[in-house]
Image (cartoon, rainbow, N blue to C red; front, side):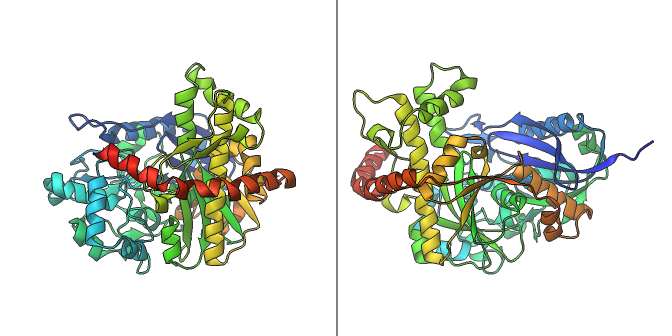
Length: 512
């Protein structure tokens, strides 16, 4: 009788879906399964308050793990978990949530963002944490709780981020690590520890925050109840994972500044991997943030932009006559049928005020150039072009201010399954766009950390070498690049400043 194959299990807690993936030590995906995820209205809360049902997240994790493991006859050697940033929950000693986990979809903490900016200059916050003062930042959630539900923090045992909560359910360990900590706007990137100054301002007790671990560190082993719920064998070692964008960067195998990483999903991030933290004033002005990398001593310099979220808005607004499971396909077909320039349409994808590539102008979204003959396919193409324009803008900011000259873009995430969008990225930026021939890079990065923790790999360097895959490359078309350069430099680039006064006036009236 043969020995069962030893594998690594990665768990990805995403904002729209929760996945589990089974990998061999060479990084091949043997099986995977997923369950949908999404925020829900807070019971008894004000209109628009959105939360995560943490028990539903746990049940989805269990179901995804069971379904993935049922497809293969293997021995799980190690587990790791990744997840989205910013969102967390206060827990009692027995793990009971003391208040619902507020979702990044919820805007209730905008007043706390404004209050914090009055307590400490946002540029000083940026110098400490590498983050802009966004309403969704964890620090502003803590301040909201301090003002509205002070007993939640006063009586809590620990605060855990979403991925850390799943690790707790697997092992009973209260833990966190550097990459997810750096999404809270409470982590001092220079000192690599929690910022006592910011915690004190927010009214967050420091003892609620776990010690910072290094990704790939074993936190504990799977206990009996978790083994029964997930199908993962009891006693399996569970290692720290990290924030999903850092884990995706790890899974891609790219750590050099010559290749910028572009992660496309609901949000899009253009990322450069650096060996230094440089919170330059101009980077603050242009909306560039920093986070810790999974690789110790390195940082991710990144521009955060809404992308897939704008596509989702167009699908809901203009494609309601199409069956829900066909809308994206029809959207892309119609966008592909239109020519570069979208028939004279320009879209400004600033759909979340105060965040993204155009926050310096306090921009809101706009669609310019509509006529009585405008087709919805032209609107669809204008959305894709706009997302590529903002990608070009933020790439240029990082390149110019940090003296980097990238030779290519490596695209990860949901956008890797869209040839039209990939070619458009190449044509607009003028850079070759490469895509790993691997379906689940973020899950792979998580499994690599599980392997480091389990001793399958000696370290991250060995894990990267063991799990490399070929790349598919899209070369820029010179004629298309020239056309897009004209549109970008002479028209699109002028939109944010031209509409600044109108955007501010509209926002003021909406809040009145």
